[in-house]
Structures are given as C-alpha cells and as structure tokens.
Image (cartoon, rainbow, N blue to C red; front, top):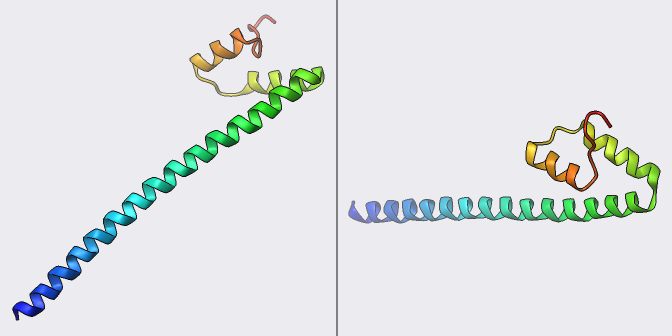
Length: 90
C-alpha cells in the first residue's frame, strides 16, 4: 500500500510542477504580448507622425482623431504641449 501512496505523491508533485510551469508560461506570454504591442505602437505611431509631418491634410486628420479620442489628463496635456491638440476655442 505504501508503494501506491509513493506513486500518488510523485504524481501529485508532478501535477504541481506542471501547474507552476503553465503559470510561468502564461506570464511569459503576457509579457511577450505586451512588448509586441508596445513595439507595434512605436512603429505605427512613428509612421503616422512621419506621414503627418509630410502631409498637412493627414496631420489635420490625425489631430481631429486625437481630439475625439478618450485620453487621460496627462496624455491630453502632453499632446497639447506638442501641438497635437488645441484648446476648445481653437
């Protein structure tokens, strides 16, 4: 009987190790996804800014889009300071 218990204990330890490995992998995947999203934002944002610098019509479209976006106060202040948002009066 104790041999059966030893086997069960080994299986339970293996199960715990697998659960821990799965949890670590989930965290690693979340970190990779976050890094990829940040990279995507940098690439796409850079391309949009470069295009806006070369094409005034696109710059107006970008500014209009940003004005309609839900931004927090810090982002609004930053964009306003950089000239991508205007005060309500113009």
